[in-house]
Length: 286
Image (tube, rainbow, N blue to C red; front, side):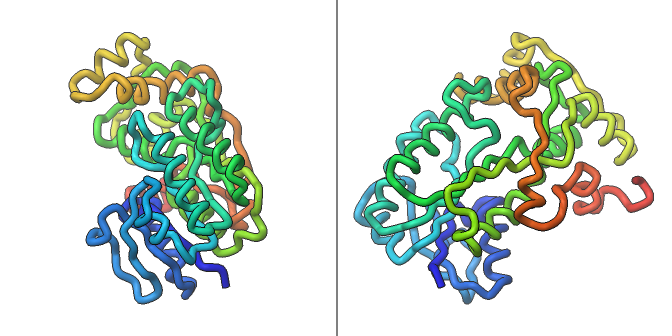
């Protein structure tokens, strides 16, 4: 049995993957920047790890064959961190990298963070790992959270469409890949929801399902930067937030893939599935 390693186990995606792997009764190594925050499992060994190439990181990665690399937290040095970490993984003898990338990853993408993912994918190939790229689209959960918290979705997306995906689906796919890496070697999987939706349609669906009034405010780019100034942040962060919507407007986040179903054997979750999962609506609201 190949040894599985999971990074980001204190985050939402990584912790859910860790849980799914444990439920299968498979031993794994959990890698965390803050091991004290990681959930303890009888089936898993917790090791301290940061995204860097140091003797300690190489040591932490030793014995791992298949590694889930959850992309590092967003920051201007992220590509550099990823490359250093991948160098350490290579030195440690890791064979297969399952990397949480982004739908439509491209160095010229409108969504600024998509460019980081394209560079990371290229480096994984360059180093000669076998790989599975999990190209998640934007999370449906994110749009739901924003809408329910603020009573609106606000951004310069126009009538652009997005095939946003449920976070749990991406976690389930990641767990499946780790457990059967051989079947998914050197493949790029596009992880999307079951339909293309505009921001207007998301707001309407949520209004109808939750019986709350939720609106979509189609801002101009200038208005979008201005309205986000109430949150103190750096320029690159504002660029990220706004380009989430401009990427949708220009059509880069549209397109439904069946890769979630191909891996899991059942269709990707819809907005209503997520709301049911959260107990926010009952069956009769279909």
